[in-house]
Structures are given as C-alpha cells and as structure tokens.
Length: 141
Image 1 (cartoon, rainbow, N blue to C red):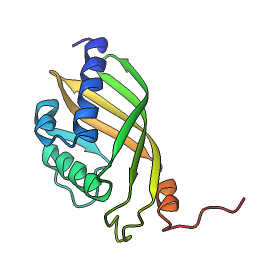
Image 2 (image 1 turned 45 degrees about the vertical axis):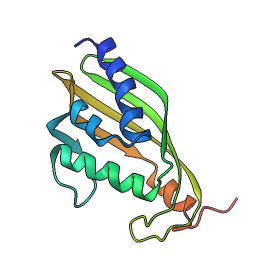
Image 3 (image 1 turned 30 degrees about the vertical axis):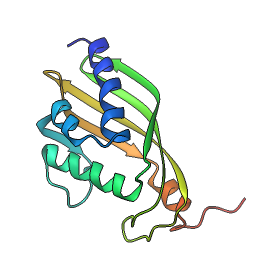
Image 4 (image 1 turned 120 degrees about the vertical axis):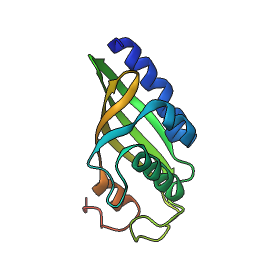
C-alpha cells in the first residue's frame, strides 16, 4: 500500500477503535501478531494486548476521545501527534477515580504491512496525566 493509502486507513482506524471502543474493528486493522513496543505491563503480546489496553483505558476514561492533531505518512509508516481527552471515572494504576477531566498528548508510530498494523511505537505524557488526576503534585508556578 502507498503512504497515502496507509494514512487514509489510519484516519479511519483510530477513531473507530479509541473513540468508539470498537474491538471488532481492531481485528480488522491490526495483524494478529502485531508488535507493540512499550506495551502496558501485564498485557499479552499481539492483538489481544492491544484489545486489553483499549478496554483498560476506556474503563478508566469511559468518555475517552482521541483528537489527531497531526498525521504524517511516509512509506509503510504513519505518525500521529494526538491528544487524548477524558474524565477519570475508574481506577488508574492504583489511583482511585478522581472525576477529573484530563488532556494527554502523545505521539504514535504505526508500521503497516499487508494493510494491517504490524508494529506500533508510542509515547504519552504520563507525568502530565498523573499530575492532572492528582497523583503527583504539579510544579508550582
């Protein structure tokens, strides 16, 4: 697939999976043996780990919404700078539900192979998230 086709696929895929929580769509977009670099601790490899991550985040933030701020494609990779927004209504890594609204920025890179995500790398502002839910004090000033 071309970079343009990969980008179009990505733009269809992410809202369906993250904003709608459509786990069946994940099966259609991710390779069964997708490699997730920096996967959440305790999640299994492959598509099952991806699904568990989606379930976990949507349980903590049931109103989760991903905004794709920038999407760039080249070759078999698509890069997205995104903002996740939601309200913490569930426990997050031992932190009780705060009811606080959060906005977390991050960057993800996906590598497509045969029309499916074969590999994923991502970083999110976890320190900012912890500060927003009150688990870590924000710097003064």
